[in-house]
Image (cartoon, rainbow over all chains, first blue to last red; front, side):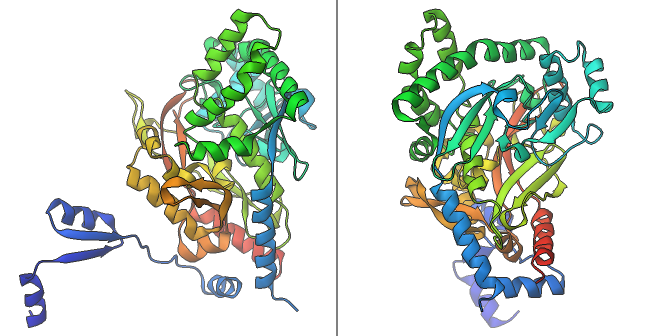
Length: 57
Length: 422
């Protein structure tokens, strides 16, 4: 494990969780300071459709 | 020469401006056969996209059977079913009649309806009367008590409300539903599943006229208690108002704004302004709910009803941040309610000019779902809803939160590309 990572875990963690909320809730339950950022991956569209969408928006 | 993108922008601006500027006013009560221009005997209107008996869910079937018994076209549920399967009774979506109905949304010829007039754009829209919660026709129940209540609504509630609204129209042209919705949103309602404030506001306006309507005191008192005892009394009027707002935004060339979102208990369907009355459908999901005692998700029917016209018009579930107390009815936390509203800004065209949310510093509600934004973000409209038992004859078993399937927006966008040869 790199020194950087080891250092990180020795410090008090402040976590920004992106996406699945279950990880955020789990951290909160363990008393870890965390915030939740709602995000989901963009939908996967067929290439032609995506190009047309990009053109129209 | 302007690009298609510019045309869309112009069309969407016009659609959403019209949606916000529409002025729906409750102006009359009458019988569906006389009020709806295309209504006729042996025709039943239902919520959502077109449905056949074979594909209809339990609660939709129950409501169809109940409406036939109510109309006295048949004496038993078995006879009633034969009328539908033989094609003697015809089923059509409410929306093509400029009408809306919560849950199964059945409107039959002799049912009383509210008439709403858009003072700004001249459209007329309609909704049936609300029967209360639990064992009621719109949730698929059709026992004697359900039919008796519908008959009492027809014989007693409707005449009093007709006399009442006609006097109000003489005095001041009707009741502005936009004003009631705007006020109620600032008093803790979302105006889909919470109409507590709206119903109080409505009763404040109609009660003096009911007292003066010339009917006997005891009957007026009974009707008042029925209206006041049901917080969903104003739902059907709010829906007719939302239908007027979205109708004003409908059929604008190049617009990608959604003008109908609805469900028939089997399928979910939408209309898009620039694509006219074409339905884009997908299987209806089952809502995440809070269940009445003795029921669970395994009893639930897929999503049902025209009431998502409220979200289409920029309130209801989209305004949940205005209604923290609603979570006790539909589930989730106050934070969930706020998050749902905030998310809906990502896929809508505007912040409503007249409908505001105090908690969000009086920010306008998210208004005008744009199918392009749904495709871009993957965020889909989220609404709150009542939940029916999956079997006919039981009724409401809970309320909850549900999202529209991504697929319907994708299908609509594909059709848009084809329609405008992009």
